[in-house]
Image (cartoon, rainbow, N blue to C red; front, side):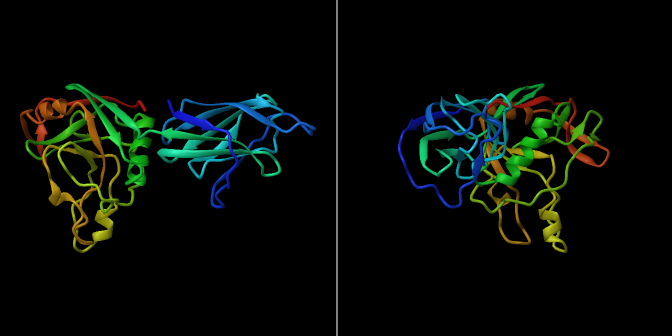
Length: 290
């Protein structure tokens, strides 16, 4: 749930801001200016559709809402009316988001500031739950990619298939029998040089190892697999274009004891794969909770 602090005032709208046209909200010409008496954000999470309720009197289809680019892909409920506008849009920023409602002449009718929290995901495993907090400000491509896999249910029944005590636990791409899970989407651009470091308790994307003959191809190769650092593995950070490191995109908020427990599991070799837990450590679900 988003927290907001509202205030009535007139201010200049940023020229670069996204103007969201409020349509299908009913009402026609009126001698009375629109008045906003209430503003509420419901079911709002980063990368998901937010539902925004704007209540008042003489609200019209010519009104616009400026979110500074934080809310995109707008759509509007057909049951909007002159007393209640219902706006649906996708949140693509976190932090303090200014929102300005204007009438058809560009006059400011209402302003409010919405606080969008960093996204959190609970990864339920056969060893216990791990809650992650993600950083879309530093690594927006990586966070959005991870959340897309979360929302699609891709991580269900995948394994932590690579466990190295004192180093990392890695998962998100294989199922029982060390079978590659189908359904991975296209590889993403590497975001390893964004100020986040591979410290203990951070989560980063796995990818192909560095290839001096193809540094760009190996760098931009992450899909669904991720790892959690068990130690301060700063040598995994960006070094050079030929040693671009691994992109950190969040931290373990709760459940590091579960991660440490997974790291104690006996491992062996399966086919060509080493450091495979001898007993499956399964991800039963991954759910965005905030």
